[in-house]
Image 1 (cartoon, rainbow, N blue to C red):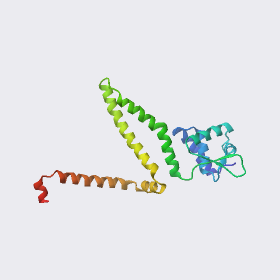
Image 2: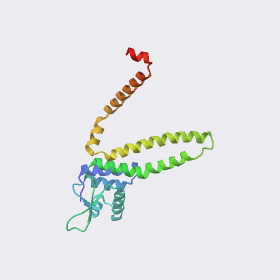
Image 3: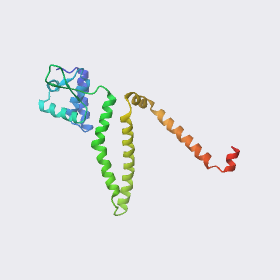
Image 4: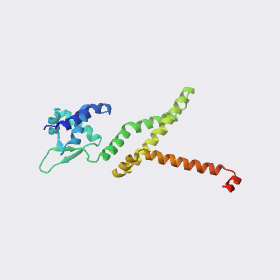
Length: 195
């Protein structure tokens, strides 16, 4: 199987980026090939296209399956297993968010919770716990945001992303209204009558 030049450029780049994302080059290239492939591919086709050994392809596919990033497909009258990347880019994003959370965020949150329950032994530990509390609050907020995203359909996610700086304007407006209500509530009763 020959990979067209444009697809090959994508596959090679994805392999290079893979190491920066915490996956090896082989896995990155296999995923990129499946992502741009016009049809599901079997392990032999993947190995031939990328010049990878059968065992490298097999290990790469197992890793991608463990991340839920490829679907296993069986074709009629063909005993081989075929693989395909999900079509919906937002589903891929949601899957990656869930998997990264399980592997990176959840263990860190557990460690932070345990560290915050420890009795500090001195000023340095107290300072460290304050900083860990800040990180814990941030990570909890991020996981809540990720949970919210998991429940949104793809069209809603696209709309949300397209809002861009409009979201900041809405937050600024909300804060101005809130501040106005606070200042109105803090006025003395005689000042409120004049209003």
